Image (tube, rainbow, N blue to C red):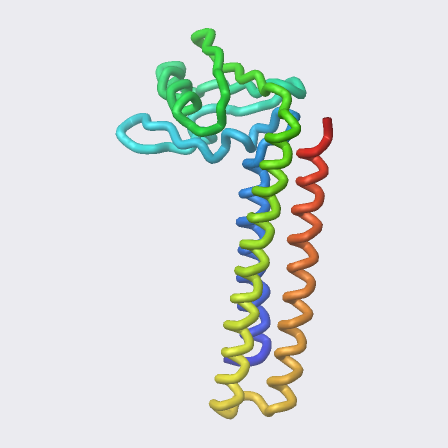
Length: 186
């Protein structure tokens, strides 16, 4: 592997770790309604577990309400069952055509728990990024052993990988801090 290939592979993997973090953070409840809260739900229909996004349009017309409109009205009971069975703690109202979910305000204790979960997710992302850095450094060492890189090129590559690591750790911190602020808003 050339230095550019190692650097590109490292950056792509760090970007994927960042994407996973953003998706996880989107599923964390804030005081406001957000369609991302139910995006991860899977509904048992047509003999398989299907993501709710493929079965219905999900929107948040008001700050405290999520509305789910099934594409096939026959799936509304299964969607309602999946919401009730989830650990989200929502109480859906089904009127036969759509499902409304009123989002209750968060208590101070629940907000603190959410912030703790955000910090855990951010730390997991940082660990993943550091593991990717380690793999990139190993690849650089191997390329130097295979005589594809000189020692100076290897050291330069490791410096670039370290810069990427710092950059992505900063992005993780920024994303986590922004989500913490959203959760702590009253």
